Image 1 (cartoon, rainbow, N blue to C red):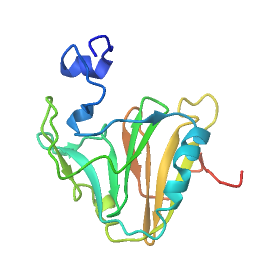
Image 2 (cartoon, helix red, strand yellow; image 1 turned 135 degrees about the vertical axis):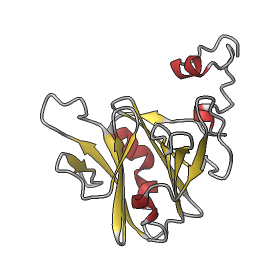
Image 3 (cartoon, rainbow, N blue to C red; image 1 turned 90 degrees about the horizontal axis):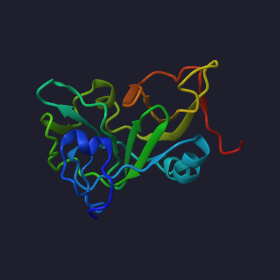
Image 4 (cartoon, rainbow, N blue to C red; image 1 turned 45 degrees about the vertical axis):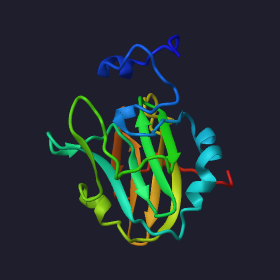
Length: 194
């Protein structure tokens, strides 16, 4: 393992010169490994059916990492949607990378991040808390198509529509952003029929 090159993030946080690819270190979240993909087709092929299968499930928790010292959302880390027997984990990176993982993070475990004290919270953001207990009507994928030239073109966002609300997890320039309104016209909904 000594000849595996470390990423920029590993250099920043001062991890050892050797990197164990089987161990997780991403933001100190145990067992979490990002699975970044680009492009609507690739993401829809890999995760579309599973997102559709969320319909009918009730949201138990919506977890975000909270920076205790700054008393703020740590938007670089994944947003977790816990449906009891299924957990959707969404994280954006750079301009166009999206990592969707399933059932890999235990929000009850501690996070070891050397730069600040981070804890999982499911009551930190009012918009997410309002969705607790609601059933999913649809899991969705959207692609941003703004006027040229737009650096965000091709960015894929994840939407979840509930009985009485919705959330869109989008790329907010190298971190997650959340929107609880109807998606803007620049977001084109992925349709399985197209």
